[in-house]
Amino acid sequence: MSRFNSPPVHGSRARPVGRPERRRRSGAVHGRCSGGQPVRTQAAVICRFGGSRPGVVPVWRVGFPDSGGRGSAVASPPIHQGNERDHTMSRIVVFGAAGRAGSRVVAEAAARGHQVTAVARNPDRLTGLPDGVRPAAGDATDRESVARLAEGADALVLTVGGPDPDLYTDAVAATSAAVRALGPAGPRILHMGGGASLLDDQGVPFFDAPGFPEAFKAQAAAQIRALDAYRALDDSVTWTYLSPPPVHFAPGERTGHYRTALDRPVVGDDGQARLSYEDFAVALVDEIENPRHLNQRFTAGY
Image (tube, rainbow, N blue to C red; front, side, top):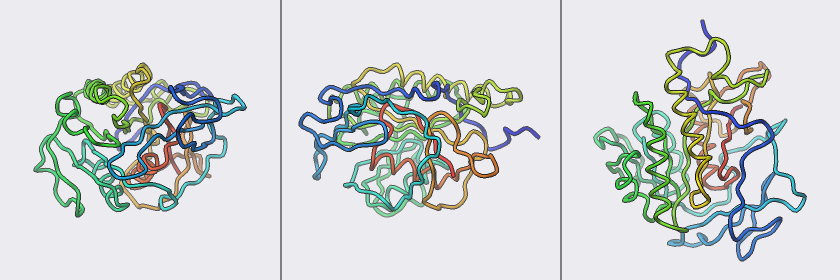
């Protein structure tokens, strides 16, 4: 049996280890913020402008530490717990909310007290939503649909999928255009990407490794193009692309614990990278609440 067994692999082209893309935003300088609230991370100073009270949309800008370091993949990634957070309520719009990942992101965000809109092309599929979640019809590949739902939001979450390989790049184009049109008040985009571009222990993307199944190549290549499209965006759009493990990613238990890295899977003592859909949702909502990977791809695992 191939190591790339079900569930299907979602793919994305990796950036070289140790060279994550970080873009300096206007209003942020080396090691400090100009008029904003500094929030230090391992590799950047993230400046928060606004968003500290209801009705004010936060704008996040990135400055690099005074040391000049641009960060690298973490050799021993930190363990995060989903209940350790410092945040205010956010307005989160989840596209693909009827799916396995999207429904869990909706549940996780709602349980933390966020204002959540669950979006599906067919809203009849949005059953069993948590109390307070607003269902809505929408299409992540349609700019007008996205623009209608993006207004007033703090984050757009894309957990979309389907047989059309152009779906992912079409979603990038539609959401980025809608966000850009809203100006500085536009929401962040958080994209559920794929793990096929993560590097194996030989430094080779899983997509290019021998034995990668033909059945998954179209979808994996489509997610690679989506990540490339994000990286080609200008500074008017803020995005984060979260890759699950390339193989062992399935519904399971919510532990609230995970580790993060950039271009290599987070592996356990057995050398395997694993994550449940539930803890993927934890990692994604944590990223909304405490941004650590602005305009960057990252991955999570146990």
